[in-house]
Length: 451
Image (cartoon, rainbow, N blue to C red; front, side, top):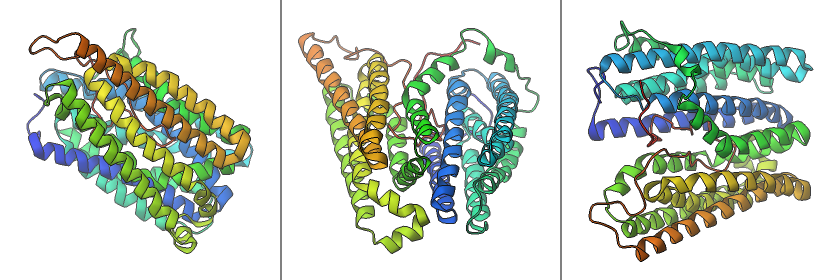
């Protein structure tokens, strides 16, 4: 990448990217764990709903801005101008969105204070994440790691200092303001490579902006599940949202594995040369991910209640009831992630129909399960959606292999097409704060955007 000097390459850059993604993922996990320990069950439910609003906003912003940004090609001047444009648009849009959230929260009953607090800190957290994409484009993942590691340390420290029983609004403010040191460091590290560059943020509102496609893909993928759980709390039982979010926090490390598989899998699989070798490798990967999910769920299921309460506080009993369903869901998700990864490499066009149809099916099963069995039923509904998506994706892979076997391929030509614009194959759970094209690992294979 012809960005600025100081860019890392090769294995060092890959290692820094993995560590950065791990730091960002660990931050999101510990935010939920610490909030659960400090809150009552109802307080954590309120915090979880507001945090869901944040994850949806973050996903849409980073799909619209970040995924398009990392596709920019050109010299150091073009890259710097693109970064300035992205940061300028994110700042303006985040302040506008934050003002809407703050006004909405102020107009609601006392429970809306947490939403108003989110509106106040939204520009800080969105700009800090936008800076991560700039570091990715500049080839400086070690700078992203420095900012995210500081954010991790600040977030844990600030939340750990909050008193037991702290309100959801106080926890939201503490979490958001804890991102300020990381944002300051990111700004200092970006000052030199972006010096002299002129941004043009208006290009983000022009017709044909590539980010619109990525935003739609996020909305029909992870976004639909997140919004479905949020509506479940608004129209049904907020405590169910707290239980589901608590369970997703326990399984958060697996989301990092899934993200790493999506991010680093395609380049490695493309080197294998043939469809049969790719399928064999992803089958092994799927088995490993599924076994890890089952084992991780078993560890939490066998954990004594006292230890569980030490992790999640008053929310633990509700989460413990969901563990069998959540373990099944993550086991099946491991198989689904590997199947969608196979499709991304062999025939990227086939991922979107699977994502759209079975993400909507997951939402329907979520609500059906909640009607029949409350939070436990909702968790089993998500597990059923993951099973259906994994089965459909592997059936699509089998059909592709059958067609490839019937038509002899020409030497040097990929079996099922050339990879093009990817689709976010994130987990089918309401837990994706860094999922859409996270710069640490989930880069997208998409057409070059014209400048």
